[in-house]
Length: 247
Image (cartoon, rainbow, N blue to C red; front, side):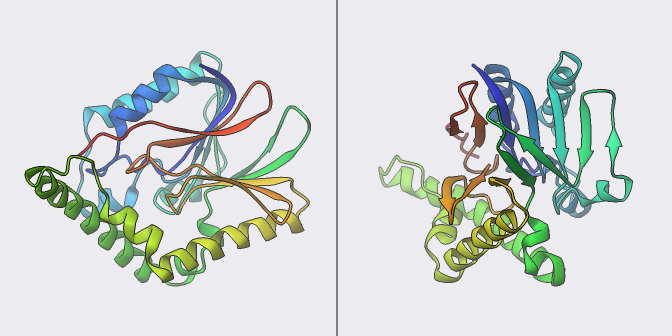
């Protein structure tokens, strides 16, 4: 399928839980004039702890570079997990691949969307990195637990996949409060700067909604949800979701 623009974030290449093979399927099936990589594409934090790089990770990078060579404009927005790129920004790799901290996307009807990973608007990430690192390790632990919980569910005859990490994120009061606050802060920034909308990642929760007149879009992730934001050639916005592979 062909779109005007596609936005993907939080692939976390270099981690055990990256859905790189599923992303390759997505990149094969979906074409676009512009492809935005909205941060945390390569997980530098995880690579520092334990280097884990599969062939599918390399295949994702090669596929994206091939798209750029064939005419797709690729804009790579850095995130907190791939912040090792930030000292070298802006990075121009040929005519069609740019690495930057943020970007302004203009739609066919002239609306302006601010594209950012979102970590600059997360006070914990910016001021208490040790808490963020701890949370990152905790998230990995929940992802590991998912595997054993679903093995038990299979033994008990409960076939449907269930994610503990997703349940915690969607239902624990502090987590829900953080997500709502994060969304409101980004929407307020877009409003103050005169943008029509904002496109981000960071919190691994895909979203397409209006907040006080601002169009808020979150790409989700390619760890658990396999989601992307898409601007159609007709100008309609949608969230595309693939069924994740079970680790």
